[in-house]
Image (cartoon, rainbow, N blue to C red; front, side):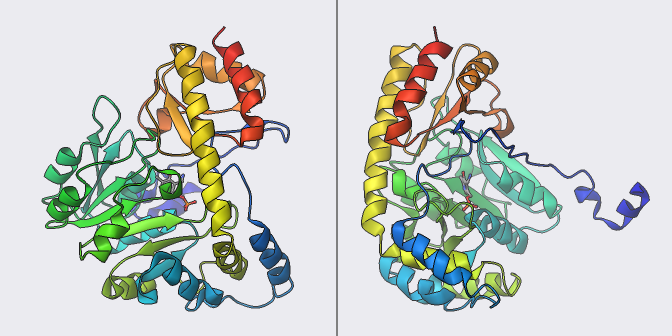
Length: 353
Ligand code: PMP
């Protein structure tokens, strides 16, 4: 049966797999960095309405009003926006069009593994730059690896560290973009403290692509919709490398409708910041070191990570080892909705008793 694999590119014959798992319905699932809340009220209505037109293909260009609405929301030209079924797919697309066989893709490690996977899926080389001892991205190291690379990625806030770039983003982009396509992955942007973003730099003329998503604060992870903001010339090429229909009409409609609930997203981000602070305080009080996070999860280093994860699971709280992200000694804990915080804190007490 396996002989058929001879037709497959050699670098794809041993494919990595990502297992999401399916914990019990009553578990408090804090292992996938999902938003604590689902679609906004207007998004839910748009989903119900859109379902009635499920026989129709989506409109990838106007994106059912999302292109115009999001361009206004972000204050960018509509021609700068590219949509995909999750920002993940757009990162992979950019790697595919810029780094082919032998191309180098530079990213932080511990970090989000799909950039390395994307590089390898195209016969390219994943170049992992170690983060600094305090978990922050090594901007100088990433920029130093840019000559000879095809793509350099910086996620801010980063996964799994939760660290974000407060200073030096402009200098990093200016330097690295002399050599390679620079992607600033802002999947957790809505949760981050106010500060300079990749989008500010793009508006100021920097050569950079910014990735954002409706998966996290906007509560649409299951519908799969993310976007990239970039030069219209690059957008046209990237779009031509996509399939005709990638994002579903339901996802477009839900995202478009949620823009009118933008105040709810601000509220969610404020709640996330409060709950994150409470979680960090509890970890500190229980003697569990952690990195100050700018996202909707906190990266902690309990003395015995496996036992800690198992003890939380015994209380019905599911968190994730960061082993697959390059650090076997840490644990990533999602920030729950405020109503679920007491359950998480109680589980933490029992895991650290
Ligand atoms: N970038 C980072 C750093 C992430 O952690 C994630 C989600 N885990 C994504 C991108 C992708 O999110 P999505 O494809 O759902 O937009």
